[in-house]
Amino acid sequence: MENIERIRLSNGTEFTLIPMGIEERDRLRYFKFTSDLNYYDILAEFENSDNLAVIEHILADGSVGATYNDCVSFKALTFVPSVEVDDKTITDIYIVSVGTDAVEKESQRLNTSIDDLANIVVMMSMK
Image 1 (cartoon, rainbow, N blue to C red):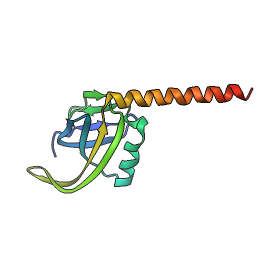
Image 2: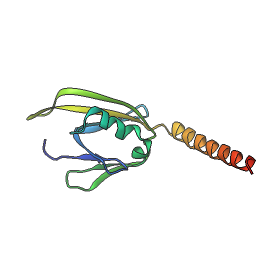
Image 3: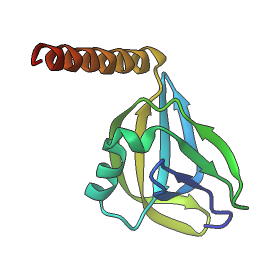
Image 4: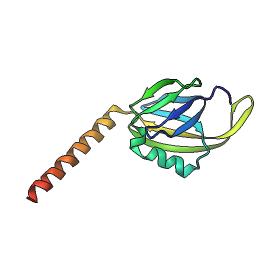
């Protein structure tokens, strides 16, 4: 594969995108990539919501082509063997889908606030 583009998670982990490796549909964003990591290591990277806070699309020249800060939650990881990614390359790929629903993001923020308030109430009642 030539003109290698990547995605970089918040923790700095990078994955090599296949051509046309980012797609958006129905409040979901799909990243299609290759990796030397095994399925379970990739799964661990994307299941950690902190790693989804900011995902950068790194262009072939090393510049940042896009920054995604709307990735709310991990949805699925799929392994697809023997995909023809260009005229010269057949390789195994992974497809990860993440939610980009603003309502889900706000719901998560409110749940965190409620948890914080509950902890404060518990701490105050212990005094």
